[in-house]
Length: 392
Image: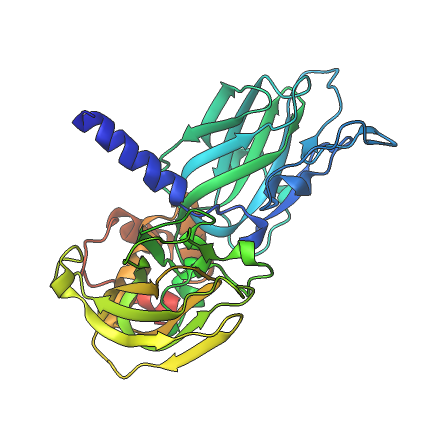
């Protein structure tokens, strides 16, 4: 394999492992569609894979597990607006037309926008959308994958079918970017919604390790992380980059719904990537020694170690499944500054202006001065106006 192929494979692996920002699991919803006569728009963000039962007819025709509009007889296109459960940087779109064979759209496009609060998607004006995928051909009964790299943090996407048809699922894989106005200096440093990220994993045969960091409690075993059965002397593990550098003082290891396949033991270790290389085994410090676990149980531990870390590694022995990993602690001041800078740097210009004007009470000149200083360098002192806005 060439260096280029290696790089492409690594990029594909990175994008495919990112959480689906639009998933109902993370709070995503489809707030508006201009038409959904044959099949409901809400199906687009269901976390389950689409299914199909032949010859299952309702009052409006064959029942489809997806979103399907009527046959368009005039110019235009059909569209559905999705509020992302996790706002963030979009890196991959999957337009899944599974089971739509003679009724899929010839082309699709996707736009995105950022908005504060809880706007009614039906009232969004046309001017606020940024095109992140232009009208592009798709195939029927296929997972159509599109890699994208928009610069900004978005809260909503609009899926457009040109001109009409049916789509089973929309996946919006990306990097969550937390809004620091909704965090304190003490929170779950590993949570996806706060910006925690899985950086490595030994095995994800049955399900993604990103599930460990999902909000809420798992409802079934499939909503956790589960490895295949090991037949050697090793053990499975997953590493997490924290949302902000800080000290982890409490941890929750949740094996709910894993009854005959929970790990026998688990251990935690931490690393500070500011001063050490996470790839060096000697750079990791024990946070929780190897500890016996029970099946189908939420285990909670207080940790004695109070050193600052940027990464935490969970080792399970020898294998098995876990529903959730919670790493509660206090973010360092430098960590909060980096979290705030990342959020502010990634706001689309118009959204940033609206936030600074509405919440910060800044005049036009002050707003433009702050925008002109983006992006803020790592460790750079953020202006007092921005800190006051964030109430940090």
